[in-house]
Image (tube, rainbow, N blue to C red; front, side, top):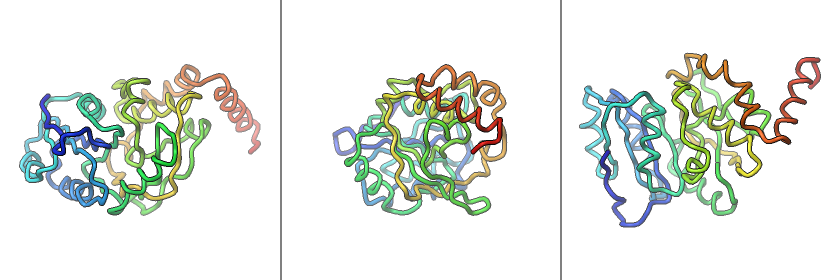
Length: 246
């Protein structure tokens, strides 16, 4: 893989990573939602899997975007490749058919980051299909039942170094598996920012298909990755559900 250095000569504060494959019809809107941010200390990496529809020409029309194209094993492989070359303190993944909610998203998130010692900051997502807001605060129990929209999450790059990257065993819910690893530990700090981060197009794989491998493994993953205190809280929650309490 080849990439360009950050044009300012220093490491950017945030690395925006977009995995792509034949998305020339939508990616322009995604790119422009990033380039219009008032907070500009970022690099933008487009990790392409070998598009043949003009995606390359569309992306290369923007000077601040780095284009990397090579065969990959799917969206999470492309995201892992992006993490490997990212230089930002924080990493953010934006889908090629998603758009940041407004021009102040990065500014608000990193003002909040400066006020909180945290490894993950997340907010809400506007799901375009059916037009609703998905979000709210998560704890180690809630994350076992539903996932945070990963386009609404900002993760310190150092956390991937600590916990590992996305597990390619899970083609649709590798981000959920990563979140179980993160929320299951006492030494990983997360913070909820009550604002909408992204317009999320939930017509894709994660919105229309189930990850059977993840669903089959979910309980074992919780048992594997949760600290004793958080595992106890999870088991109490399951027990209450079984007897109809709460």
